[in-house]
Amino acid sequence: MKFCSHCGNPVSLRTPQGDHLPRFICEGCGAVHYQNPKLIVGCVPEHEGRILLCRRAIEPRLGFWTIPAGFMENGETTQDGARRESLEEAHAQVEIGSLLAVVHVLHADQVHVMFRASLPQASFGPSVESLEVQLYDEAEIPWQDIAFRSVDFALRRYFEDRRLGVEQHHFAALDLRKGEPA
Amino acid sequence: MKFCSHCGNPVSLRTPQGDHLPRFICEGCGAVHYQNPKLIVGCVPEHEGRILLCRRAIEPRLGFWTIPAGFMENGETTQDGARRESLEEAHAQVEIGSLLAVVHVLHADQVHVMFRASLPQASFGPSVESLEVQLYDEAEIPWQDIAFRSVDFALRRYFEDRRLGVEQHHFAALDLRKGEPA
Image 1 (spheres, rainbow over the protein chains, first blue to last red):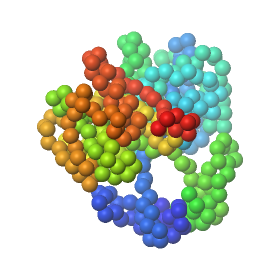
Image 2 (image 1 turned 45 degrees about the vertical axis):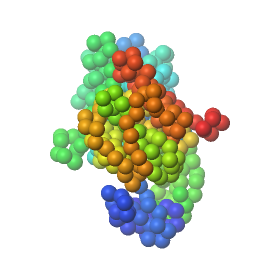
Image 3 (image 1 turned 120 degrees about the vertical axis):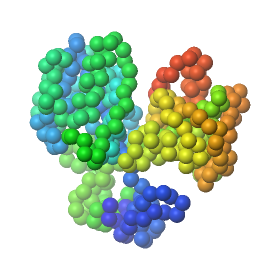
């Protein structure tokens, strides 16, 4: 951020009185511009025991596999967003189920919220965002080619819970700034 | 948003090619500025069966009671944020527990994430943000003076679950744009 989105004057990074963190503050109108984490919402759609994955047609991680997921929009719930992303990325009409995972991706200032979902009809296909869309048995999941660590985490918890016959939710925090392997 | 935060030129609201919603787009550098929901994180701290509430010293809802909660910051988890807010607003050192509620506040483009928490020491006090901080028995909760509907929702689920001896999580959506009573 270099300029104020309210008045167009330059901003500087300093800590407002009474605050504890530096913020972008407008030199013109004095507006304080806070930066907050963004929500990514997605789901693990299951059809007759198999899981729907999408191969990414866009960066980052073009060519790698992921679940339907994307930035949450204003005016929708997390479940709405996960349903919308399934439709947009995979032309799949899913029914959102229980909360599966909340992954704090600290190096990207993102919170990934992922649900279980059912896919009643085996109807889906590629899109502008997905090169291909495919149902996978657990044994066939391309673990080496999963696009994101948060998705890897969610999928592993999904299958573990399914084996146990439970539907728990799982928290995790990832921080590549701390030198963890990508 | 009126000006581009990257280059300072005016923005206009239109739908980018391949997108499905209008976005703020810079007339100068072409940057697309997405607007996404913000996360509010908080907790219900319990000490020997009683609940910690704060009376708000700031708008909105100055003078009304709430749980420690506030905007999530970059670089922290939702649990970190709830812990930090308890310290800032109530000088209370809490231990964050299980997920209690996720409330989509659609008219404010916010997602409120609230946890159970324990307050091991009965040590707390007012702050710049809280006129007073007090422990309440369930029977004494000032229900008529609770600041926000999301907090009312979380507190009611908290006590219901406690009575049942369970720790479930609860989703809700509030939308004052639909003419629901405030």
